[in-house]
Length: 229
Image (tube, rainbow, N blue to C red; front, side):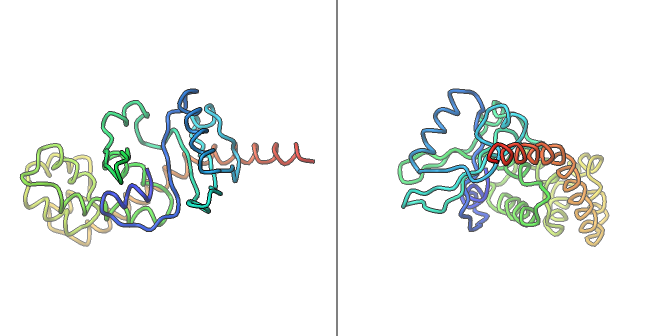
């Protein structure tokens, strides 16, 4: 669900991390523990691998020691801000084959949603993912893809091109996205400014989401340290 998925979608990003989204039920976590054992992964931070904590939105972090993957960090989550539950994500996943192994990834739309965080590096990646979709999706675009690109594109020039190609659809989506109203008026500078405001709003929503989780994480860290005294 992270940088490796972005590579597969053609929005290249070098990443030594592996980000995984898993179901937090007992059977899935047992399989995950066995996989982590195979790569000799050890926990590198709080919290521990626990279904209840994953369900609350925490991430669990590991570092691999097995020679072939030594140093690889694995981050595991079960819940993402603003993204559907796992049961809804799984049926619409993207599956590719790498060296005869099937690799399941978040659907592009879900990956873009998951990337809307406070982290500076995620926003250029969102732009590249959406540009890749714009240039690679086969024409003619269906209504769902037209609507999606009008709602999500983060390149002012491409948004203006979409508006010129699909003005009626743009009029409808503009009711929910001010940047589209500026695009319909041909104001590329205003479109760019509106996109900056969109990003700022998403960053703030992400900050608010993580604030209580960060406080809980600090409590877990203190409890762990106290138990070692």
